[in-house]
Image (cartoon, rainbow, N blue to C red; front, side, top):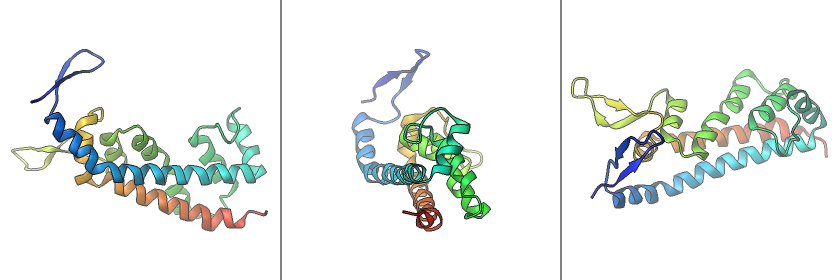
Length: 180
């Protein structure tokens, strides 16, 4: 049995799979969601600790926003840290850290089609194009299909890997250089 759901425009959207199948998929990807959310939290925690410990980061933040390091948007926090510690990080390391914010937001908000677009430039869906035999792209606002496809597309695993790499860079190049 398929259910019908309504979007903001009140256009009826058919549930693409039976609800029990959707729930099963959600249970199957739960550990990967937990890992990705945990990696995002671990990254953000280190960024905020660096800001708390380093007055130069807090000073740089004041130039970007009125919010304190513990409340500021991640975009400003990352920017301030990279500005202060640019001499400790090469361009590739800076880019790895900078590029973690958008997929972190997509992961946290459950926007898996957008996550795949952010990570690999496209969100291949379940449907095949009969002409090309390639997977047809998902619409970025298709939350259900994004959840159904995220396991096959590896988006949660890829974001977790990138966030852990950023954590490793922050610990090795910045946190260990901070004075107690």
